[in-house]
Length: 441
Image (cartoon, rainbow, N blue to C red):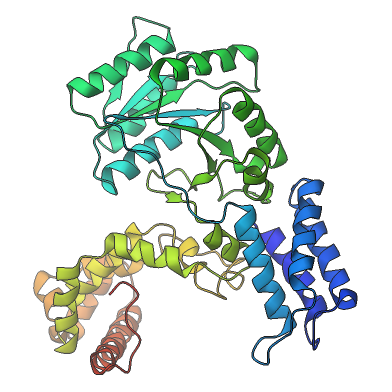
């Protein structure tokens, strides 16, 4: 995510490394390089110039304390300014009404329909709502069917009316249906066009005036950079939306949309979306995004992902088993399944400070656990629950069943036992107060 921008900013900070203080002279090259990095990331030149002006004003004359180098101080100043540029703090979504009506807008191809399903899934699983999806894109071939397929995978109903081609009528009927059937959130997926046109703007404005939604979101394809910002401005001038959604942030994204859009339309970025899976949606935190851009990781989001999968009762039971050295293959398999639910492994590892750049060019397969799962799957229930009974003949059978060599089984068993020892030691230290607490405890 924003790898080119991250590299350019890294080079910019090197200009003040090794300096005793930050001065007008030694900061000039840094400011110039930061401005170039932003413009190359498709940030409007005016915004880039204003941004670097604020960075320069904040940096000049600051004393560099012993524990902080000028380079580190510049990183901190740029991080604070990036955070402010992208909105300062996370913005909530309005769910006060019953039903809460959310209108989704944007150009064709921006990911509106997929995001609508992602939002429904998020509100259902994280906020415990009963969402209803509404198919108001009556023009694009298979748009309604696409929404039905996505909604079916998360068990959320879709309201349609094949007897009319009037989106305003469909939206109004859907809200009445929601009230009658106790759906407390209505998400309306509207039609898009390849470019902004009067017909589209009249239609979506008519829908908005008719249903008076509590929340109108504009979905932006973040890979389109400054074009996305210009489109957002055109929509906001006509429609007046409440927030922005950035999609396709896992693609070839330079960063222009994320960095410019709040400044341009003065509306917060509320959600960000990566990938096609319906659980790849996150609340947009400007400070966390600034940390990612600067290669500082994102521990807060990673901990949040842990907490989503964390069951306190099961965790306490597991901790007791580890303390008694009774951690077995059933427990190991359960932990693997929890990690896999957290999403893309490489994305998860990149949130660890300092690790993102190191693994950038390494191909980390999401199927990395398949070999371990095959080995454990080839064991009997008794073997999984009591690893100590796995002797030579059992290892041969497990090797045949999992498609591995006996040597690979031996290596796996050795690693498992070493892991058990390490986990027991860490748990003991945690109990004594000397070890690091687990992030989700």
